[in-house]
Image (cartoon, rainbow, N blue to C red; front, side):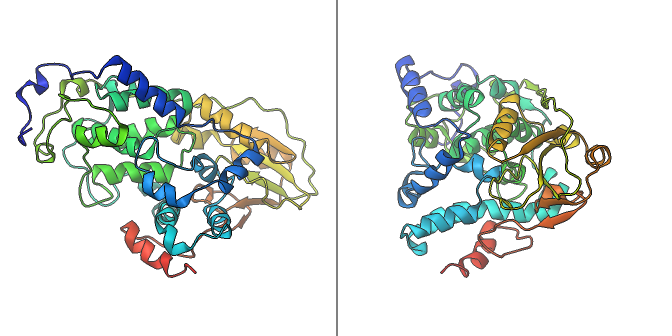
Length: 395
């Protein structure tokens, strides 16, 4: 490569890696992704097996020693504070596992941003996205036919597992937004729809970071970078260029066709609730599935699936099944699909209690605090300005 886009780049299809290598990569990737159990004991055991030092050293590689706890943190089954406390209780010193703690803190940074900015995170947060050519997503990304084997194999697996390694999420976002020139919102909604660990703040702001609307520059990754972290050896793709070529690159033909994916949530059918009007009612949702919340309190316990919420932030049937499955860990849980007015009016509910979350601001009742690692509130324009405040609170 000489820093310019190869002449053959737009004249031919990317050179495929050998079939045996594609199979080996797919096997490696699949082998590194555990089943996302809904069994609480297994989830808590996974916390006890975290190796934060190895995590810090290997997390960027496709087979890195990541925790696979993100679905349970996103869904409020466990908190970042719980994960940190259990890890420190095993004798790890905070300063020696700072990278691991920072990764937990990123989640709090996104949540704090969502608290302050509210629905503004659904729009370009700090800067307008530059170079936008469409507000859809490349059809080849959705169909896993971009020609970038590590990306395509991951997307194929994604539809089966609901999980994507964080590094490849960035690759996909860079291809969609910065190479394909799609506005970030539709691609972000597509990914969120299928993610078991879907946290809208983490997802939306991460896409904006890649697209340059929540950061000061766009993120790019070339084929050499992908080959390094995914153990592939692919060449002659539209990404097989030096970084200087990206800013002036035309949209490759494989990314020109764009679509708006149909993202529809199928809510479960629910029976009439059995409510004791003399008891308080604890409201759970897809972001609060903590089985230990007020565990000793005698109360009605309802998993509330709000149609208007899922119209705005739709999820797949696989994700919905996971949410409902996790909720089964909550003793006495009942499921209600409907709006808040229907819930309170039709069931005589008065004493409503719920856990703090940016999406609960329209709830009517008593808000209870959630567990944070750090008492750092407000909006920060960058993670590291947020982190400087957080690290002062580390023992």
